[in-house]
Length: 58
Image 1 (cartoon, rainbow, N blue to C red):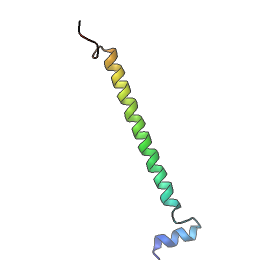
Image 2: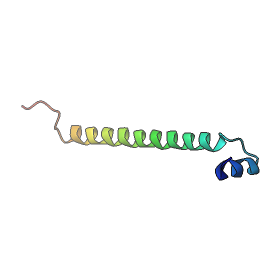
Image 3: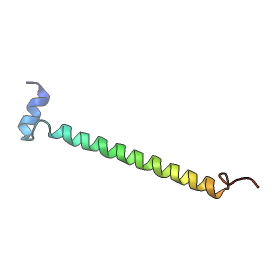
Image 4: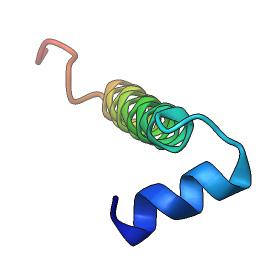
C-alpha cells in the first residue's frame, strides 16, 4: 500500500470518498462557469439590443 492509501484507511473514510467530493466540486465549478458565461452573454445581447444594434435601419 502507498502512503496515500494508508492515510485514507487510517481516517476511516472510504477510499473513493475524496474522489467523489472532488468530482462534485469540479461539477459545481463547471456549472458556475457556464452560468456566468450565459448570463454575461445575455447581458451583452440586452445591451446591444437596447443600443439599437439589432434594429432594422430606417
